[in-house]
Image 1: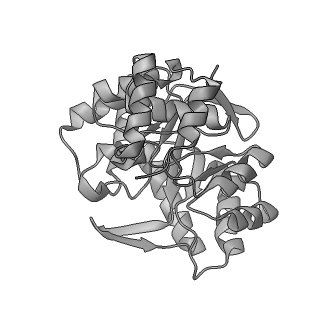
Image 2: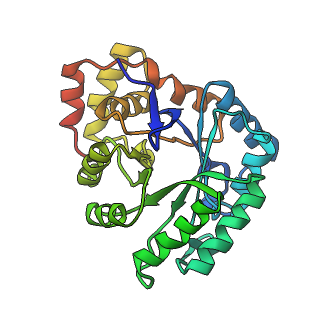
Length: 283
């Protein structure tokens, strides 16, 4: 059976299937997508369905995703964990600029607090390590914000195993967010570190960003038929079975797709099915 819960930072329980907000914004995570009321309805329904991890970022929109989260969910239910990210500045739908100087990170965090209408951000993730700024300075800025009560937990995004190890030697880390899914397991070593240290691993592109096709589709379809499920549900179920620290946050702007994703808890894969899925490769 799938374990449905994970304890973030050793003391904050959450349900492992969360909701990511990037798909509530437009192409390139820029501007709005569809009607604002629809985005608000999806966020509210996610929480009604038991989601307790909402993953967003200041540069989705930019600013828009955080504003939608606050409009939909504030005042927040006590069990809901709001995770956001800082450290990247957007100037267009295709321009991303890493910005990891301490004064930049502080300004971004404080702006996110205002948009989210929070006094404390539950999980603040460094969206990218800035290669021009020592890691100790970047994490030191977040540590200072944590001591001030503006951050509860610190997370990292798109990092190597070596970087995770270095970060753990500098401060307390609660989560890592790397690309990881049925067809892309490049971050296996990072996952192993998360398991060893009790860190949440929030896999981005948990549904392989639409790549569940080719030879992989045949294996997925056979298992999906046996469970009366979809390819996406099987792919999410594989993540939930793969490791108890994996906490996928699939995003969508559709209520129907949201319900489909959350029903992945019901797909109880056998050892033989897991072996079949483990053997799949991108094609």
